[in-house]
Each structure stands twice: as C-alpha cells, then as structure tokens.
Length: 403
Image 1 (tube, rainbow, N blue to C red):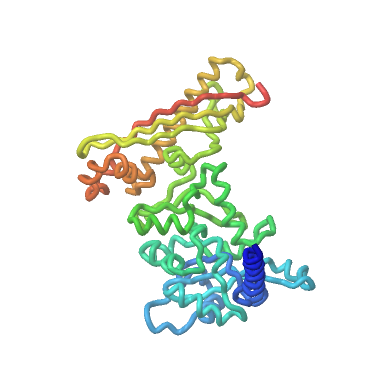
Image 2: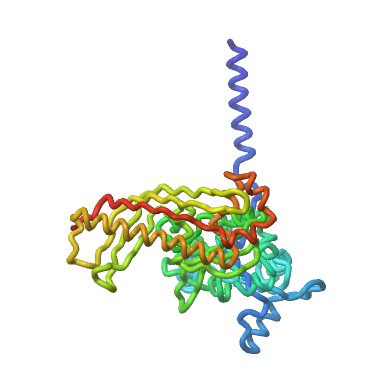
C-alpha cells in the first residue's frame, strides 16, 4: 500500500517539475520585438508609378537581382504595436503601416524587406492576400504567385485570397471605419458570405485554392474592389485551372450558389407583374438541393432539383393581399422561375468562359465513373455544351409581421 502511495506522490512531483520546466514562452521572443504581418498585396512591379518621385521610391524599395526580372511589387501590411503612453498619438496614424519591395521571388522580396524594418517579419498571422489582375496575367497564373505561401510553414491555409481588377496595395493602406486593422477587416468580410449570396467565399481560403490547383481543377476566387475609400467584396474571378479568364458578376455568383446549395439566407427578388417597377422579395430559410449527372457516352446532361422554404421579406405593392392563398401560389411560381433563370444565367457565363465552376466534372467522376473514364480527356470540349435541366419548387411559409 505504501509503495503505491509513494509511486503516486513521485508521479505528482514529476508532473509539477515538468510543468515548471516546460511552461512559458517557448521561443523567448517578446511581442514588441516582432512585426506581425496581417496582409499581403501583389502587383506588377511598375504599378502605381506616375511621376519621378514614385520612381525614386520604387528604386529604394528594391535590391540588386542577378537572376530573373523585376516582375512584382510585394506590399506587406504590418501591425503597429504601441505602448500605453503613445497610444493616442499613434492612433491617428492608423493601426498598421505598409512595407513594399519589388522583385520576382516572393521569398526574396520578404527577406530583403527586412532592410526597411528594425524587427523580424512574422507571417503566422497573415489574414488576407490580395492579388491584382495584372500580376496574375504577368505571372501566367495563380500558381507561381501563391507558391511561396503554399510552401511556407508560417502561412496558414485559412488565409483569405482575393483578386482585384485594379491595384492591390491601396487595400493595405485602407483604414476601415470600424477601427480594426485592415487585414483583419478584409478577412472578416468573407465570413459574412452566409447571408450575402453575391459573395462566394465558402472556399476562398488558401488551403482550398491550393487543393484545386494541385488537383488540376478550375479555381474561383472572390473579387474585391476599392474606389473612393469604399471597399466592396462581390463577384468572382474565374480561372481555367489557374489561368485567369474573366469575371462572374454578383447575379452570376448568386446562381452558382444555388447550384452548389451553399446559399443559407438568400434574398430573391422579382418584379411585380401587376405594378411595373415595383419589387417582391422572398427570404430563404432552408432548402434541399440535388445535382445529378445523367447520360450515356457523350450524351451527358445534369438535373438540378431545388426545394426552397422561406418567407415574404418585402412587398412594394401595397394593394396586394398577402393573406390570399391564390396570391401566395402566384408568388411561389414567380420566385421559382426567377431562381431557374438565375441558375441558367450563371451556367451560361461559366460555359462561355470554359470554367467548370459548377463542379460538373467532380459530380460526373463520383457518380458516373465509367462515363467519366471515357470522356475525361475531352471534357474541355464537352463541358460548354452540357445541358442542365432545372426544377425549382418554392414554398412560402410566412408573410412576416404585416399582411
């Protein structure tokens, strides 16, 4: 009995000793000795150069490069850490500042940027990567630009990746009205996709994009724009494999989300047939969506069955009686027709650009493997003409708090 007690006491002592030895900061680096990078922006090397002064700044933000060319301008948004005594003074300058460099290797530019900093740069807290359309075209695709971030152990795969038609650096200089650091603000915008059907950000993370690139499937990336100090996330950039081919507008993104079944709280609008110019609005609460492949040989088609349930969200025609069952049935048909129209519009844009954003290939491979094995080498030729048969059923459960 005494031996068991002694062993237990020794075990407790060993645990306490280990806790004393192993606890604490593992690398002994204080927070104030680090520069936390919150966002990265990638432009072409000559982006933003207007006058001689800009050219002089660019010549400073660079280095002698024995190989390759000055292809990109990398900008990093760094969190500004301040002590309590200088908080008010630094608050006016913003919570972040931006460092830039030009070159070809993302890794080399990051290391050379240390020449502009008194502290090492930490990439573990990057929230957002914004890439300009011009940079993607210069690189010939997404893969060369994202390769460093995909390989680096500090870069987390939950980083949000956006594409912008304009320059990327101004997003890092943007000061959010909420007061939070810009990189965090930009990343959180994508988290609202559950209630905003104009944004397809469910798989906008670096991890998902990396998986799609490795699998050789078409990539979709959220589109972001900045104009007159207003940031807007909406629409999508479409990539054939990792090659940029064009954009899908907000209406198209909405239809694509209907195909994927990722819309959780969609707002569906139709024009009032009795009052031209007025609108009727349906709020989706839940849905059942089923996309199935069919066919034999090259004769392939898909069926999409959607069953939606929700409420009337807004009626701009006061003369209608929303308690009338016949009127409700009429609205259900109108909303169902609009969803079908939206889906076919989105598919039409994707097929025209040759981008399999609806993921037809994945469905065909999973549910019709024999057919897929026969046509996979010719899928790029077959996909643009694949028909989609859409069936939509809408049920209005409630009319809201007012008739």
